[in-house]
Image (cartoon, rainbow over all chains, first blue to last red; front, side, top):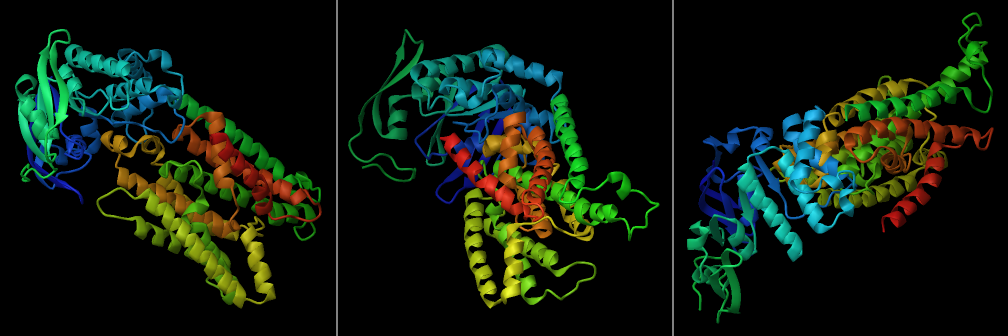
Length: 271
Length: 331
């Protein structure tokens, strides 16, 4: 569905180099890697918010660069890490903004759009909050409302940037089960960038391991997520084993490896 | 949503209509509308008509246009900067206009450029120059406009231009300084329809730019990245917002001088009533801004009857405490 072929992108401080990733329809892909490894940049490239310096990002065979922005947004939605609106929008207003790609600058939302927004609220368990001011919600409620806004976009592909980073354990599991339901029941394709290896192990069927702007490994979660991989990514000795109760791999950090943490430069040798 | 916009426009539009009909009739001298429009009395003898058409009507029209422009510019800038305390003065455009006006008052008050008086023309040029400087400073071809650079550039430019104004005033003689100070207060006593007509092209171009923005400003005021991911051309919208708000400010200030605080009070009052969606906030701010300034001018004209105060004094007296109230309320 979404294919990045040999994509490079440079910022002042770091760069992504010849990244090739494929996200197939209905997949749940996790992007993991240390801080500054390029997860967020990769998501922005996938959403067409930034264009690659070289290489192409294509959606169902069409290069994103050749598609109008609103056409892309009708098919790809993005959920940022945290959202702090400058004004006191209500929950339903926030969710209805997800209809923008279908409406454009002048059209106003009609009953059909309202129905879609209400259904999105329903799906995220936030229908009772519709009239509340977004800013008065708890962290977990906010994140679910933002996901509802992305659902209202009616896009088949959802990109999430650390959607659980600021949430407590209860809300983390709540958002996790919401994402799983979206994937299983609606067939939404999801790409999840996260620091939370256990969340990735719980949800994702495939993982992309990023370090220093390069893909270190890519494949099914059960084969890619290993002690060696965790050590390579973070310089941490970790115990990775299947947890029968949770039903997925569980990563338990044990100690930092003696010596230097692998830097952002993949060419650097570890002492 | 369509209903909300229609109700807002009807409500605030009706209010504006009433105020604009009543305001020209109120003042230090009572006049009769019937007499003002009575064609059987020669214009030279018809004092009511003279007061109505020369003293009051241009003032009301100017008040409505300036109020609408400043309030809309304020609302747009508050969304662009994601900061509810942003105002038309923030960007240095008003200061540029002031420098232009004071240069004209001091050095070129006799110059004529066709039908245009030198002071409004110079202030328009000053405002547009300031806008260009700030824009070039904040521009970068690939990235979104840096709003913090815009704000800081505005602050720096304001300080620099204030110094220039003091310098020019130091060189001015007593009469010129007096006129400059009066101009800086902000006054709607335009005296004729000419300056109003001259400002219309700039006001209309501002309106055409801003007309595109309400939905995009909603998304932008939530999160720039998320807006981009929803199909908003962030860079284009930011530039249109900046230029649109600056043009509106430039036209308003060249007409009336820098009338303080309208751009901040009106958007906030309007949001208390209609909510924060820019598709209702912008039309409501334009209409209520017009109403508000015409009313303030009515107060200014009648408070110390028969002395007519400049409207800038009234808005500033209202605006200072209002601004503080906003700050306290936010915490």
